[in-house]
Amino acid sequence: MKTGRPKKARNQLAKRPVSFEKDEELGLSEMQTGFVWFYTEGACGQTEAARQAGYEFPAVAANKMLNGKDFPKVTKAIRIKQDELAEKYAITPQKTGTMLWKITETAYETGQLNAAVSAIKELNQLAGLSVNRTQSLNINASLDKMTKEDIKERLNKLMGVDTTYDTKDM
Image (tube, rainbow, N blue to C red; front, side, top):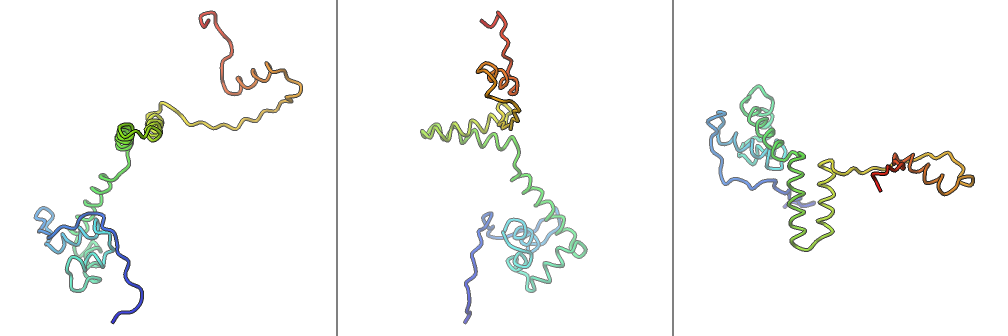
């Protein structure tokens, strides 16, 4: 009878296939294909991946499959799968923009206007249409000796605002 703490259940990243088939293209057996899947998508370490794939001595099998010498086709398959997953789940501006647009539409359609506005702000920032700016301005001036107009002019100059008006503007 086992005592102690029960094992914590791990979340599966992907739905486990019912069975694994030989990978003729990479030259992998069913068990090797299973190991690659469990190791890359099964949310487990190398020994557990070998155990789940059905190896009798999982620690030894996992070490041999990952050392690059004994089973180079397995390490190549793992690299290929990891590259595919990295590309699939990579955060890119295009994916982020698409996701934000879907959020905007769904939020708007369901009447969640604050969420829609927030998503639109994020989209604008992603597209470079708006910029979040914070500036610390060091104003070395004595406000006691300045008029209201002097203060406005000084602030406009520091903020880069042009206060000169052309007759065309009126």
